[in-house]
Image 1: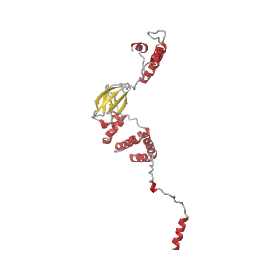
Image 2 (image 1 turned 45 degrees about the horizontal axis):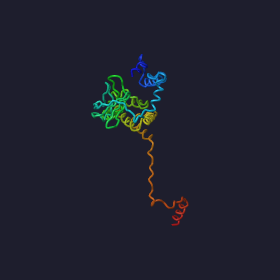
Image 3 (image 1 turned 60 degrees about the vertical axis):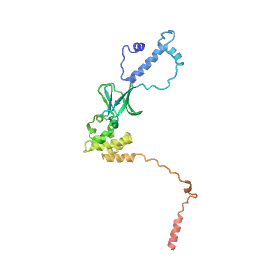
Image 4 (image 1 turned 30 degrees about the vertical axis):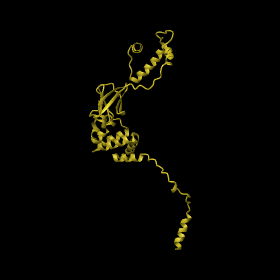
Length: 256
């Protein structure tokens, strides 16, 4: 590590993010392998000696997760803290014990082996990394939080959905109506809801009932399941289409 620090990090380089650093670091390491002489075998490069040694190394048995784990409890604000930042967890887990796993780039919250939430790791201080979908059950009880609640202020919704939201929030009880649309969006996906909102905007009829009606019309019909016919109910002789039978029935009726 001392050699690598001297070769690559003196003077200290700067990068936009870890991905850029890792790409540069891999390139530099490969160049050093091909160029620098081995400290004990000066006639050969480090890369040549490593290629010879690599064939004798044991294969890696399984991947190394490489995370730091700590037990914590989800706060009433539906968040857990790590490294002076807070990360959101689905609201239904407020007050419960969970495990937080921190890697170099991600924060994962796990409970009983199930991943509850995953966030890009923040390297700032006193930041809140909030996923608005984690707070949807809160909106069902308190739809007014949609207007000023921290998770929803900078919510990057699709443009048609955002336009419908802005229109509804100007109406009385519009926040509750938009929560209904959000519930449908979580169930059916943002793409279908975007189309439904576009249709509502085109028709200039903006309310939750109209948007949800478009959703129901756009949903693909469920596949028809064919029920097998028992053998004893199958026709042995298919009926033949014969319209002249109708004429004969009419003749018989008139003859009567």
